[in-house]
Amino acid sequence: MFSTEDTIVAIATPPGRGGIGVVRVSGPDARRIAQQLITHRGDLEPRRATLTRLRAPDAVASVGDAASAIDHLIVIFFPAPHSYTGEDVVELSAHGSPVVLREIVSSAIGTGARLAEPGEFTLRAFLNGRMDLPQAEAVADLIDAVTPLQARAAFDQLEGTLTQAIASIDAGLFDLIAKLEASVDFPEEGFHFVEPGDLANAIDRLIHQTDALLADARRGRIVRDGLQVAIVGRPNVGKSSLFNALVGASRAIVTDIPGTTRDLVTETVDLDGVRVTFVDTAGLRSTADAVETEGVERAVRAAAVADLTLTVVDDDDEPEQLSAEKNLLVQNKIDLGRRRRGVGVSATTGAGIGDLRAAIVRALDVEPVRDRPAITNVRHIVLVQRAHDALLRAATAAHDAAMPEEFLLADLQDARDALEEISGRRATEDLLTHIFANFCIGK
Image (cartoon, rainbow, N blue to C red; front, side, top):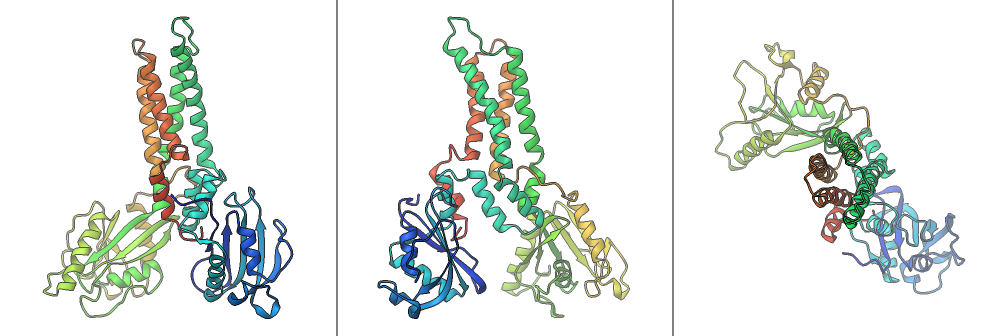
């Protein structure tokens, strides 16, 4: 696990050039380090934007002035605990030149900071109680969002909608566990802190709450992770042209030469609110070319794991038959008078592309997603399912008068342990490292 005692620095904006770039510094020496990088000599006032200049690297070690400056900066100091990480944080906004931003980071490291690891700012926010683990994971989901619905669902979780739902279930479990433990601790006195009927009803209510979350799970997985559609067929049937038409860009190379596509080409689009990744594949045929043969094998594997396969034809030949759970036949080149089979389109003129999009949505069996699901992360879904299963066991025990209360108590505690893994209260160091290592540097 990363040290949380030192001060870290990283570029917080995406790579490349832009109108503005932000460098974030967090830790006990954040303000001292930032003030050594700028020409402003006064104290940085909390949460107040300060216009200043960035000192040249060779002037950082000495008192600088405007003559040594290399850029204008807007600097904001956020004192602990009211900052993103819960520590002292300084954000330096410069022009979005990679050279300038790297100079800021390099100078900060030269004055005592350490380059942040991926996700380390958000990890510190979690460790300092600024957010729980689902909210921290929602930060990454919001950054990675491709569709507006993905962004809204991630923001809801960042605002704590899942946290509140889990907390409600956890509070009910805590109350039941406390009462049962009291009953177990005083058996001789004959105290029963919860009646059997009330206990069974309370467990049923908790089961109903976990049921509601799990009912959202498939929709949530689709919103967060999306679906994959593989485009397959013989060479020169127009797979790449169809791929370009569906994604709205010339991503795949289109030629009259068979075997042009050798590797998988992918592009992700918003299809009726759902994140759909289209995969263009090599033409299916026997060939002596080793590279093309590998491309064909990759096409077969892509079709096998796809949520839907579009089998493209352009003549009266029988289409290639691949192992695919769901398949949609697409007749291309209808502008040339081809006999229509399946969904008729012309990748060249765009005719029928709208009908094909609608057919894809129907074939994927996805109703247009409008409402934001409460749960989207596979890790959360698995743990809610574990809590749900434990509650079902507890419900069975609660209806069995001969079952000792200790067994019922163990099932309820199993359910609570699963929920605490979601919130992060029981998260292992390995789990935290795995989650935050997938973040970008600077977040």
